Image (cartoon, rainbow, N blue to C red; front, side):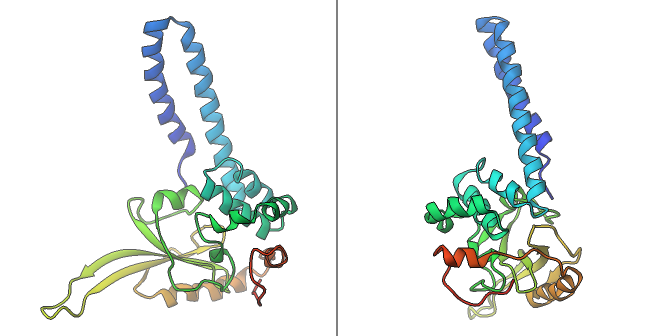
Length: 237
């Protein structure tokens, strides 16, 4: 589920209305014009960012580059690397001049290299943060999710904890249960099904996905290798 940026902007405007009224009582009605200007700029900024995000979710590398200029550091760096992967030459030049940015990303860049993930799940991320980068239809906005990076079939899997069974009297047998959800590389959920305690079945959705989407864009891992961001090895594209 993508956050309604206009609604969030509206909340911020409400807060500024309160501040504006207090300021007006002390300094006169002229301050209202200042508050209105701030309101308009805030709403326009949030709207522009939401529009950019939707373009990113369609694979637009220029939008990814623009997003890298209007986010906090780790998010900005992630979008910059993604812009390079999707063939943006300006982004490539920026990253080549600032290679350290590739090692300080919200999601490690290995998550965006097909089949390069080093383990099934390599981090926990809150739903709000995932939503901010475009993950839609998250089953709960109050939970944290484990993330397993892009498979060779170009799907990403999120895992959400759904239950816990404590150990027995001898301290053995503890079990944690998860449901798994399947997304494409642009963070669209591609299967309504929740896969209970079976990440392999979740990744199996990728076989059907890749057959139905033979026109997926080529990823420029070769650029990252040439520029010293990734070590040379054989990649799937």
